[in-house]
Image (cartoon, rainbow, N blue to C red; front, side):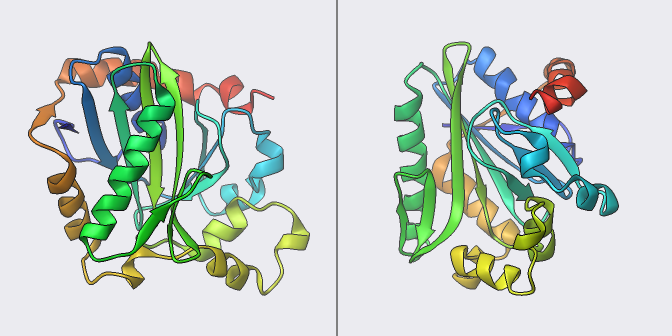
Length: 235
């Protein structure tokens, strides 16, 4: 599997990386491609979700948290520079096969680190009875896109408040409740986040493909579909 690299290392908006996945799927050369990315505080919600029902828009505005809709299904996710996002693009239209393959890859990488991780039928990777990674997938241009979060660390206040608009859920024990359902990878390894990213890349990929400036321009063009206000609202 080839690792996909950008020609520079600047941090882009989440919408760019969603467009990058789609661009890779529409122009697939490799059988399998993979890349990792990080973003400044952002909420990403699923294709079929209603924005107002899932996102605390006032909180996000107050704390400069960006909001984007993705084209896959699934739930609402908070991301920041303390965790890492995985993107897997696979040639062929069997998206369920690609999904299962990728979840198994992630589980095996964690087990290689000495962490007893397991995959579930609910698109999650668990350590014990707590979630460390969630995954979604969809089909583009006859090829499969699988993307997932990896909770190395995160801002728990933002995670709770940005994606939970209901006041009854914003009680003082809210963070403790969320903390009982998720786990942070940093609590299970001595690896730094950068060391973890290197380990994942070395474990999963052989070789790399560096995108050109023309590729980046095409991705930026495609990105406009994700930043379109009507698409973000949708429902």
